Amino acid sequence: MEYVLFETNRIIIRKLSINDSELLFKYSQEEITKKELPNEVFDNIIETKETIKFFKSNYDDKYPLIYGIILKANNIIIGHIGLSEIDKGIEIGYAIATEYQNNRYISEIIIPFVDWIKYKVKIYSKII
Image 1 (tube, rainbow, N blue to C red):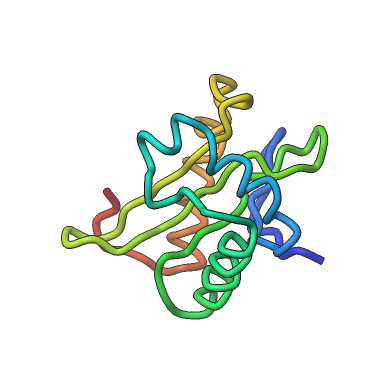
Image 2 (cartoon, helix red, strand yellow):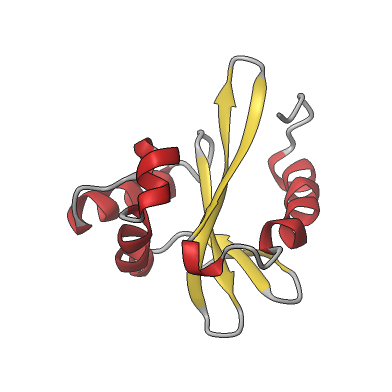
């Protein structure tokens, strides 16, 4: 069973699973991802799986912390949200697959995500 961090009316935020590999690879091949997030473009499904394994290994105590954004209506991953260390503190980053954009999913999850960070991750530094 995947580990659920929290839910909203339409979205579940959970730890990534190897089962997410196929769709995360597909989303990484979108033109907007190649243009705006070139570090999140995978060369093949094997690289996608290795990256998910790396992210999963960080869940205990390291950054980046990357979690799946799951659409409840069809129980599929539609993107990811996470935390990375930067010089100024902690950065929240996210990506939503093109076909699911403009539905206010990030607006729905960002406040609960920040609350979850404060409670579970215990980050009190400046979030950028």
